[in-house]
Image 1 (tube, rainbow, N blue to C red):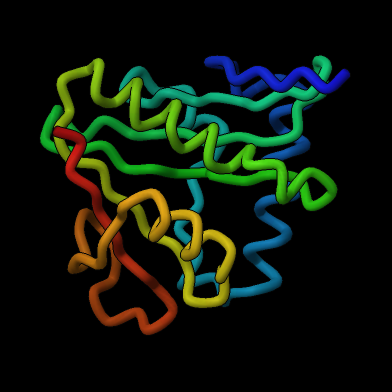
Image 2 (image 1 turned 90 degrees about the vertical axis):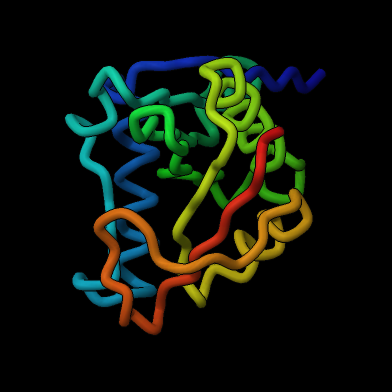
Length: 154
């Protein structure tokens, strides 16, 4: 029987670091360095960040995080599901958990940046109710490889 759980986790664990490493390699293969806005493991350990993992029978197979930007909005970061486990709606479960936890923090808006070549991610976010928005935070506003999206959590 397949039991998938989603939990708040420590990004420093061996399994989380492995997953983040795979995500980095995937993104570095798709985009030039100036278009990759990756949060390090150390950045994911900051108090304003919530990092979660999805596990199948205890094995870490996916992750995601959100950064609380002073209660103004949350930013989804580090969404990834290992290729062999895609199509099981794990990304959707991770996203719903991040949205729920952000909402519990009193955050009313959630935003994200993804890349133009990540069609599966764009499809997931669109189905989840995210819409296009302008650049935010420290992103380069003229980066043609970035897609910015947001969703109202109220």
